[in-house]
Length: 179
Image (cartoon, rainbow, N blue to C red; front, side, top):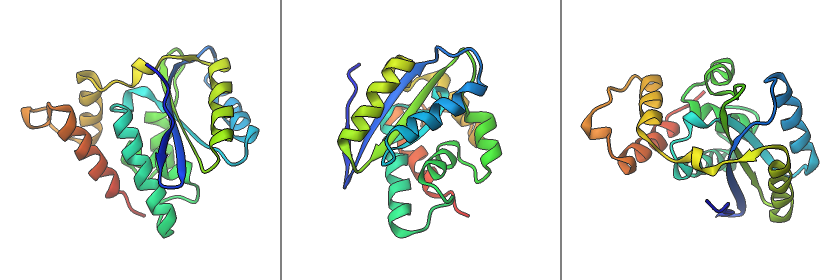
């Protein structure tokens, strides 16, 4: 799967699936901080890939965060945190990190966004050096639908068995997260 750069109004975004080469989950925080500090204009969020129901899901939730930032109504002080909370359908950072944080020997998803395309591309390139890029882990599937449905308390039924309506539901649900 080719990595794309998405244009969302004045913001560029890239969604990257990966498998970690790191054996200790405590190292994730420092690597993510280093990646973020590499180019100060790039915002970066990492989340367990099981909670990303396809690239379209990540992009739609990012659009919500960017609009909340534009309107000054984010549910967190930083856009990266707002995005994480909306992806995990909670207002509690500790809950979001516990359930959707990166785990050892698992797959993850980086969501990068910036108004500076060249800096975004620089960070994306460095992610490729540090992590094994595996964008196929971002594909929507039945297992992910069951995991996300469990978090939301939804029964897994025929009305939510199609990818498009389920993705739309997830985007609308992310809009409902408020302070």
